[in-house]
Image (cartoon, rainbow, N blue to C red; front, side):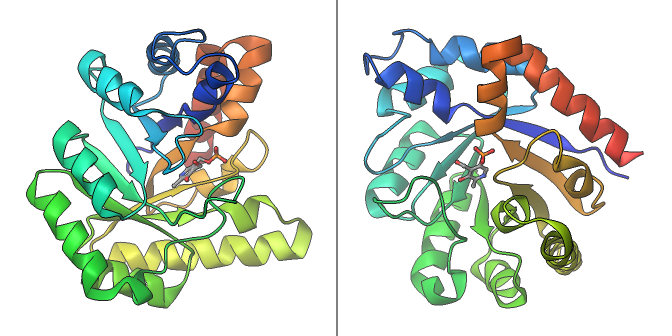
Length: 245
Ligand code: PXP
């Protein structure tokens, strides 16, 4: 099986920092968190620059880009303003996500079918700047095909519905993810997955052979309160390696 990469989403370190002080460098320090996540076994750092800047700020993107040697995966809405930031800061990767201001977290996948030519133009402009573009989608055949048509290099399958369900319903969601991963892989897309993953539910997702990257945040940052960020990441990495065997 191909190696499974682990991207650590550190948005919620910024949530904690912003509760007191929005300055880059204020405690808890985002760059230090990123270094700890990498020390623990993370392959890349994922950050979501939301339009309302509720956690990651523009200064964080610039600072991380400057100090980090590992790849940065910038999650963002497909807007003109965000595209400009990506083209200026040039992260290794961009993951285009849907964004609603009132949502607590990214609630569903991007509607790539509806996004049509406009979305494809954004994908192509970012790709032309050397950025690997992935589209965060629900595990749905039409969305997978549309992502391929739009010229994306990768899809990130939204695992939220799987993570939030139990029993038979969860098995059904897992089947949808397995099937979508196969479809995307057959089209030549890189397959990633993420949202709501934790030590208990990650095994079945990590065992899907077509998936080569997971992006995990909220659970690992929460767990870090008890064991430290490097240790929480190392434990997740261990579970993923075991699932892959
Ligand atoms: N992938 C994407 C595209 C996301 O939007 C998020 C949440 O910001 C994650 C992964 C990580 O989800 P979680 O924080 O639930 O692990």
